Length: 301
View 1: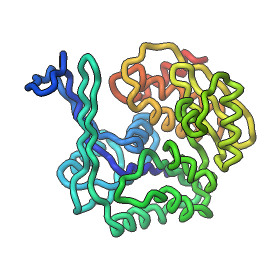
View 2: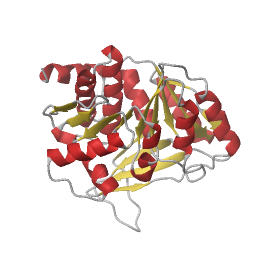
View 3: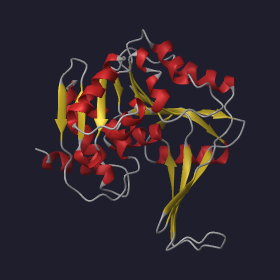
View 4: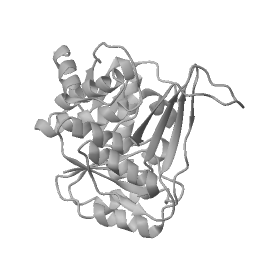
């Protein structure tokens, strides 16, 4: 089974305006509400691809109920820890001439709530896949990812970490199955400017030497590069299309990679599926569907 964890899920309230005037009443031209969070995006895309999975994490209050309701209405399986110390956050995204965001802080998560999540994770079995995605709320210990990886270390579970900065660096010693930095994140991690593919491969090898089993580097419209556990390097271009919405494209790439790898444990197939799925989300107003991914895979032949 595949499990995703979103520590600080949200309701994303998207407001469309012709223009935004500070200090004035602004009339919306349209709005939408989505369940948000990196792990949740991975779960929704996996579900769209017909891959069973369970979304884990923390939810609270009426907003948390709405997050779960929206996921379940799409056919996603959930097993959230329901906290009592607050409500799940609302992120407001204003789409006008310039885009602005106001992201909520999220609720306080107690040690008792954390232990409930850890108890669920302790039930994972050999062969399962776990996706740890996104930031850690300030109410949780900064080493929460590390605690989870140490707890599951000897159980034969593939752990994918989609995070940035020190949060990612600190888990490399625990040998995650897959990490997915993009070029900018790679530059920030090593405080460098990367000007060539050769330099990018060199830094991917550094991440592998630090403990990562597989390093997937997202190159946005250029595709992606994969350094696998055996040291093989795969590079693949992205299909052509018009960028509509980049939000969730990286999470979709993770979901596609998992779906491709689950098929026959082939890294090249996983890379191709990851690129097609990430591109399908980028070329659509919504997250990638199975039909959209299939069409892009055909074009990539």
